[in-house]
Each structure stands twice: as structure tokens, then as C-alpha cells.
Length: 84
Image 1 (cartoon, rainbow, N blue to C red):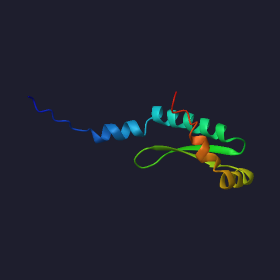
Image 2 (image 1 turned 90 degrees about the vertical axis):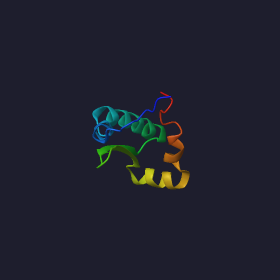
Image 3 (image 1 turned 45 degrees about the vertical axis):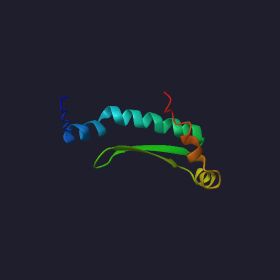
Image 4 (image 1 turned 30 degrees about the vertical axis):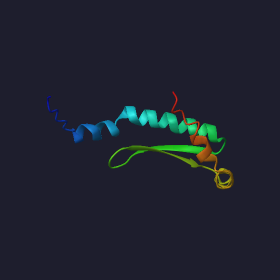
């Protein structure tokens, strides 16, 4: 039986996690979640120190209170496009 040694290329993984492809995919899913949540929700995609992230947030006061009262963003995440 052979022994297999796996060495992770950390720089390569970091490049993938910050890459344009990941940013595009995250932006697409974030937009789907914001659209599912309804009017007044926005998205923002940024590169953090270790990876790209997308934030979906209530962009208006009405959406803020809607999210507080009904957990709109949490419910919208269930339809966030993970089945595509």
C-alpha cells in the first residue's frame, strides 16, 4: 500500500478565494438573495484579507425594519441559488 502525501499550496488557494470567478459567483448568489428578499435590499462584494465576501443588507430604513420584524434576509437565504 502506498503512502500519499498531500501538500496544500496556500498561496494558490488564497489566489482562488480572492479571484474574479469567486467574486462573480458570490455576487450572483448575493443578488439572488437580495431579489428574493424584496424591495430595499442591496449587495456589496469586497475582498477581505483571506477571501472575497458578499454582504446582503437592508439598504433602506423600511427594509431594515422589515428584516427585524420578519427575518426577511434569513428566509431569503433559503432561496439563495445554491441549487444552480
